[in-house]
Every structure is written in structure tokens, then in C-alpha cells.
Length: 187
Length: 447
Image (cartoon, rainbow over all chains, first blue to last red; front, side):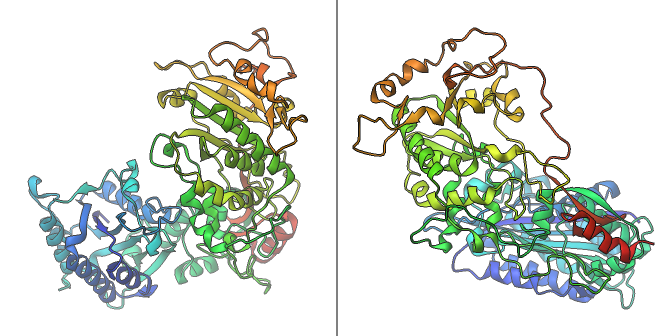
């Protein structure tokens, strides 16, 4: 099987009054361990919908689509390890002191079966002009496009959220660490 | 809507193989069974076994994982070395010893608000600046970590190992204060008084963990603590690092009150017990580690020109093997070299002629204390003749950090523990009590 990969990570301001983090957490953590393509598609659609509704909170992000099999498998492993090794997560709470911004990230990675209509559709969706790569509209367009994903062609998906608890939000200093260099400012 | 012209299979299902639920991160991964079956190269079994071995072993064994375990019931088992810290992160800080209490010597009296421990990590994190990059706060991370998975049930009908309810370390930690810590605190205070805000200084404290923390607390008005504590406590730990954590808890208010500093000269905190002797024949848990002390060239770039290496007594010299290469390294950077001098805690004592307070003085008198910088004229060489350093020195100030004959600085097995695992990498139990665990599992599952 030839694999393709789609991945998107967005970094948002963690607003104390916003229910976004809690909603995203609930969606992912309450999703069943054994599920169907339809339910998996519904999870992705709802997650993407929540992110789109909160596009004003987007600060940084990145996204990828590769149709190279080796790259796809390697990158999917890398995105998965981002969750498994808790690489981006803080090791200690940061609290929510007044006046100090906090941030959250949400990551979506899909390992796709290459050569399928779904993979071709994702390829078209992600064919974005260079000047538009890091624009807010582009992120929103791609998130909207995820509703077209067919889970019949998704071999695996991984979804994760940083932080799990509100007191463990990322700080500005965290986002300046080398491990977050891949996140670019969203214009 | 979903594009159903793709190769859909009726009844095809997704199964979750990893679920992470931590304060810092939550998430999950699912696999499409029919597509995995379709792909002969990636069988479900090898994928899961591979993750268990290579993926940091954080995967929660889901229904799919349990299936895997059953599948492997006929496999042979073996004792396999694993990194102790990895096992603790996956199965809990008390891996293999759930329910065995930690023993705290010198439990502090007085009020203790356990909920305040949540702030300990933040308080001990250096303020943004040069010192941040050096911090190794692994020990503090242990406080609230939850296991990400559990050990499978043995087939002899007995309860699974570590099946007792898990308690986070923060729920059982006690603040400690011992007479030795009080002495170390006073010495730290004395050093801070002597150095004031003199620029270009740094300190490396290499004392038993609780004393190292106490020294850092005493010196905290002039020096910013930078932890180099790279392990987790364990009920059977070779390194009693729960005591170090207890000392941090005791001095938490002190560290909080001294965070606003004019200068941020680093004071590196090391636990001398990190390389304690250990025999694999015992039932101890090897939570030892090597110091991750920054190189002198790096410190020089941060403006450090002089480093005090603090030990308990001159007899604690020479420095352990994991520091030798760093402290005696020939410095080749563009910046002026960092001059390293040893300083012993035993050289601080109260002045018998001053009965007014608990102060300690370098050399034990106010007069010798006043001559401290004469004894430590950074930039000049120690008084003893260069060459092979003496086997022992009467005063730490005379010790020379020079290259010594090669000492084995790394042990491959340091910080590893034996576990019972299948050939495919599924971990079945800790093997602290080797014979017992091995017999129990091998009896049921070996073919």
C-alpha cells in the first residue's frame, strides 16, 4: 500500500472563559475505542468545526500533505510520537496568572491510502500558493475541506490536544523553544 | 460529506491503540483494521509490538492491546533490561512496588499545604534567561504523573502485579528537615553572604540530595537554583530521591520568596547519591543517573568565570567520574576560561567566640571568614604543585581539577531495571524479585 499523509497543527490562545479546550478534550477523550468510519468522520468534522468557529484565536500553525510513501509513514510516526512521548507538553503546570497569555495546540494527522479519491482530493485541497501558506483563510479552508475526507481511505488518525488540564497551558516562553520552531505565525 | 466511492468495506472498524490522558496533553490514535489487514507489510501485531518497544512505551493497552496479549500467551518470556525512568513513566513511579511506603527520615513538623506542591515545578524553574536551558527537573515531574497503562493479568489467576490503587507521589510526599540539612542551609547562607552579587560566579553543589537542596535554599538570595535531578523516586530506589523531593517541599516557601533576584548566578543542584553503589543481586530499583552538568565552555559563554564545586568534606574529592571530564576539561572557547575550585561544607562552622546566632563562618571564625577571597583568588592557581593531584587534600581549596587516568565514566546498565517481557516486547512485570516474578510468568506462558 502506498501511503499519503495529511497533518495540521494549530496553536490558539487559551482563553480562560472559552469552552473550546474543554470541548475538544471531551470530543477526543470520549470517543469510543472501537468505532466505525462514519463515527470517526463525525469526530473529525466536529473537531474541525470547533476550530473553525474559533479561528480568531489562531496564532500559529503548520500543515502538510505528502504523497511520498516513505515520507508519509515517517511523518505519521513522528506526529504520533509527538503525542506518545508528550514532547510538546509541559512537565509542570503553568497556572493562569492574570495578564500572562496561555496557549493550546490541537493536532490532526491522517495516514491515508494513496491513490484513492480521498487522497487525491486532499492533494488538491492542499495545493496552496506559496504566499497563502500561512494565512488564516488557508487554515480555515483546509479545515473545512476535512469534511470531504473518506474514512474508508484513512488507515490511521491521531488527534491530540495540549494541554489536557487548563492549568498546564503553554506559555510564550514555551512557544519560543526550539521544539516549537515548526509552528509559523498565522497571518 | 464523506466520499463513499473509496474502498469502503461494510463493517470495517477503527480501533484505538493509544490513549494519552495527562494534564499536559490528551489524545488518541485509531487504526483502520481492514486497511491494516490489506497492507501485508504492516500487521497489527508487529505494529503494536513495535510501539511497545520503541515508542516510549506510553501506549495504553486497549481492547486491541489486550487481544495482542492473549495472542502472545504462548510466547516465551525473558528478563529484559529497560530504562528505569521509562518504566516508571509508563507504569507509575512505584513500578513493581505498588503499596510499598516511602520512608521519610526527618519529617518536618508544622503546617504543610499539600496542594501547594502543584506550584513547586514552576517555582523551581529558572526565570527566563541563561539558566533555563540547563534545568533538569525530572524529579519534580514525578509528583503528579499518572501511569499510562497497567500490567496484564497473569494466567495463574492471581491479581496483576501493581494492581493496588495508584497514588500520585504528591499524595504521599512529606516535607523533610534533618540536622544535616540545617548545616547545609547555614553554609549556603554563608556563601551567599561572602559572594554577594559578585559577577561571574557559579556554584555546583554535589551533596546528598536533601543537603544539596538545603544549601541551594540557603544561598538562594544570591544564586538561582538550577536542578540537575534526573530521576524519579521509588520505594526500593538505590537513590533515595524522595528525600530530595521532600527537602524541596520543605524549602518551597523559601525558594518562592527569593525568586526576585538582582542577579541570576546559577547554582547547580546535584544529588551525590546519584551514583551510589548497587548490586544487581539485590531487589533494589536502579534509579541512578549521570549528571547532566553543562560544559565549562558553555558556562563561559554565559559570563561565568569562576565555579565553586561544593562537596561535604575534602574526603569527598576527587569528583565522581561523571563530572571529572567536565570539571577538568581543557577549555578552548573564545571566552576566558572558567576557574573551578572545590569548597567543602565541613569548612563552615560557627565561631565559638560569637554566641549570638546560628551563623556559620568559613574556617570557623569571623577572621578566617574575612579572608575567604584570599583563599579563593580566582584566576591564580591553587597552592599545591601541579601534576598528579594528591590522593587527599587537607583543605578543599587546594584540590586541583586536572585530568586523571581514565576512569570508566559510563556503565551501560546504570539506570536500568529488569522486566519480564515476551519475545515481542510486551512487558508483563517488573522483576525486582527476579525469581518469583519469572517463575510466575514463565510457568503460565512458556511454550
